[in-house]
Length: 122
Image (cartoon, rainbow, N blue to C red; front, side):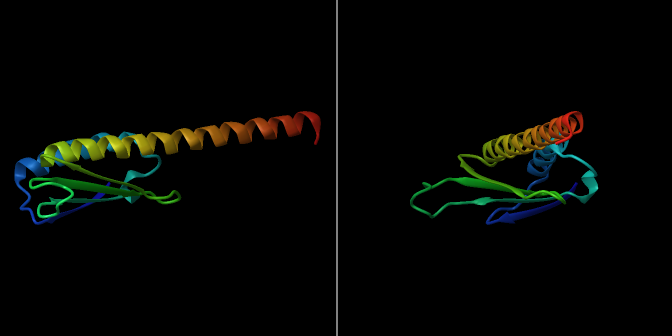
């Protein structure tokens, strides 16, 4: 998986980088096909100074683009960078699971329709 990381108003530490890499590794099991073609863009940063977020908020956003399918995007705010990473990872995993289930359902339905068509000649 081709990963790009951008830090906004934040210096990315090696500990945070290792934590992020560990979380992104769990996303790969939901990707189908050749994972070397998948692009994952991550942005981490501080949302401080905006009244609606409070004084000390961090954000994480992940965009996963697979060839042949649409991109999956999630953004989340939390009190710490690690919490924001965890929350956004769960959201991306949920979206990827949903997309994979949809693909399987369409394939089964199409296969059943073809079988029915061949059986009855319609």
